[in-house]
Length: 77
Image (cartoon, rainbow, N blue to C red):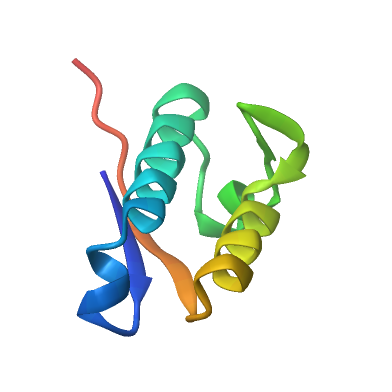
């Protein structure tokens, strides 16, 4: 589970924002990062040429609003 932060409801309802949240959550589930700094520096599992920080930055440029990764937790069954 990941908290993805934005500034407006308009962005929170945007399909690109939702996809970003899903991609980051799947990455966390696959890699089990220790903390937020470790997460942001990791290569994105779907495209290793990008880090998670770069992935978020690309969405910021695309959507035009500040986006940040908040808290996250990985559950195991």
